[in-house]
Amino acid sequence: MSATALKSDTQAIVVDEVLPHAPETIWKALTTNELIGRWLKMSPTGFEPVKGKHFTMKTTPAGAWDGIIHCEVLEAIPNQRLAFAWKGGHEGNVGYGAPLDTVATFTLSRVENGTRLRLVHSGFVLPRNELAFKNMGEGWKKVVPSIGVVAAEQDRLKKPH
Image 1: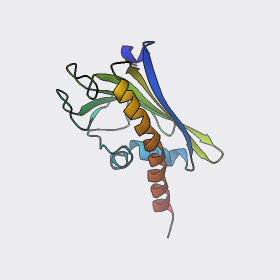
Image 2: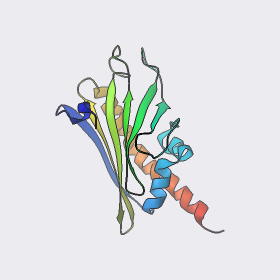
Image 3: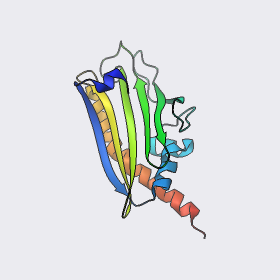
Image 4: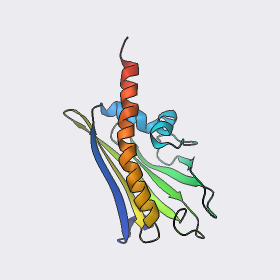
C-alpha cells in the first residue's frame, strides 16, 4: 500500500452489499476488461488480474490533468480479493483533477444467498481530495449494484436455453 494511503488524515469510501450471485460470477465481472467497462463506465487498458500488472483507465481531463488513471494490481486472489492502486490528477489542479493516490479493494465473501462484496476505496487526502471523495463516494454506491447487474447477465448467459 502506498504511504499516502496509510496516513491518518486520509478517508475511505466503503460500500458493502450482498449480491445474489456466486463469488466466481462476481470475480468474472470484476476481472474481465469488457465487463469492467460496463459497470465502471471506463474501460481499462492493459488490465489483467495479476499482481504487479500496470494498467490505465481514462476519464474526463481537467486543467493540467490528462484524465488518465494509473493503476497497478496490488493483490489478486481469485474469487476472494482484488486490490489495485488508483492514481491520477496533477499538482497544478485544485478540486477535480487534484492529485489522487488511492487504493481500491474488492473483497468477496460467500454468504447464504450469494456473495458479500465489500469495496474499500482508501487514501483520499482531505481537504485536497474532498471533491473526488464526495463524487466517487456517490459513484461507487451506484457502481457496486451495477456489478450485480453485470453478474446477473453472466448468470443468464451460462444457463441452457
